Length: 245
Image 1 (cartoon, one colour):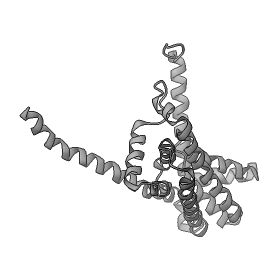
Image 2 (cartoon, one colour):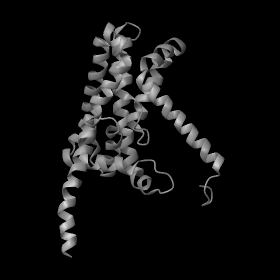
Image 3 (cartoon, rainbow, N blue to C red):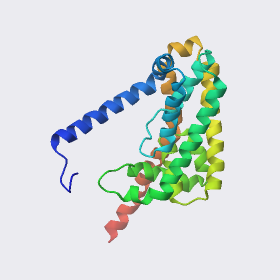
Image 4 (cartoon, rainbow, N blue to C red):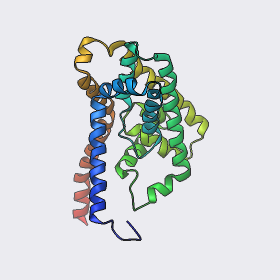
């Protein structure tokens, strides 16, 4: 909006078009991470460390970018390290640093600007349903949610932000943040390093990445399904009560 007026149609159309192109790129990047990272290694050399660092940092550190493909990228990096094209120990340190720093920045954003971001009406930087999922997850698991969310796409980007709003002591947050970051990177980097170059995996790389994403999303889907079922169970109880009035 400009001075309270809606944006012109052409500008809105351009924004939607650019957004759809971004979504298309992200989907392709998620499913074919290996096909992007390989050429990047040849073209950018040592700059590849910075590029992947930015991807992992943004996915964990920027609350409005929850769709970046953290799990699949780390797995693909592990596969390239397993083939000898990358140094696995350098990547281990870089990825852990990116993951822990990202969550810490996200926590600070929530702590300092969280309320204003949520209450800002013109642009929804954070979807209300994602905030509700994160709130429910934190209510159920407490501080352990910081660690557990690390293995759940979308939720892992929202939880540090919500925790920051709640003003949890940073020292306690950092403990769970670091533990989750180390185990998350160890798991997916290790899987890529040891299994990413098997003939079967190379032949079905996109399906393997889809499988990783699907398995990661199971807890989220379970939580959504449970929430829907609980609402459906409550409705029959509420209707007779309303009829009695």
